[in-house]
Image 1 (cartoon, rainbow over the protein chains, first blue to last red):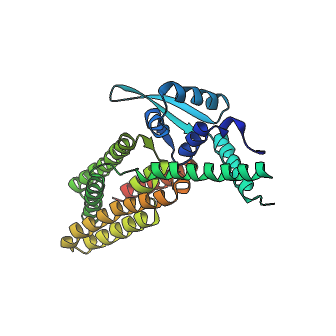
Image 2 (cartoon, rainbow over the protein chains, first blue to last red):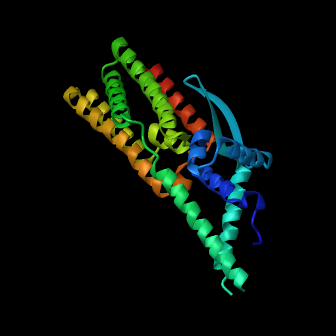
Image 3 (tube, chains in turn yellow, cyan):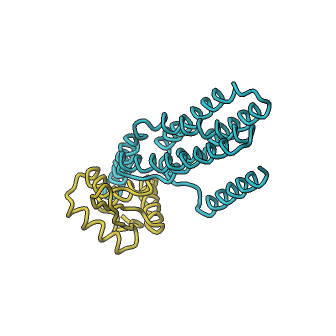
Length: 95
Length: 185
């Protein structure tokens, strides 16, 4: 499939980016539960997306508990928009 | 050809799955328990005390108005914190549009309520101030709930708040207005 961003084409990453596009920030635990993956799997995907500049991660403390907050960057938002547009174009491309 | 058809089907399934996952998330976003009562009551107290100060200037009224304004800020900050804890996510749209009441319904309700309550105070119709303040507080809180319904329908549009330069401009304008009001007292 052409025009698709291979970095976010994997289902977990694409779903993760889609969830982040609907919020300002999401807690790591919320994303993990939504995606139904383990901490290590989510961490691995997040690292790849952070390296690509698509998401940013910040640490915080809430009621004495360490929390991790994840958000989509501007370039991540653009990449997701392009990827979804490519998927739509694929669907509309009736011969 | 068959490969194209399979790609199309896969793309359609992917988009449908993404829509469903996103909708499941936004459908579960809730206002913190007691939000409507906390915000509605605090806005009502703030409107009432401000109208009192404008209608009958004095140290007690000024202190009450100042304390109520500070209390409103504290309650808003507390509700924003509770929203994040309740939902495990944050929405700039909630902060600006619901908590700070910048939706059309929220700001019109607040401005009309403040204007009416101030008029009542200036014309010595004091009995009118509490019900007007209460109705304004309720309208402000309900406007926040209506924003949440809009967010569930259009999450991508409603999640974000206004641009920060605009927020800064409005905050500076409000501060200048308050200072002007203080200088006239």
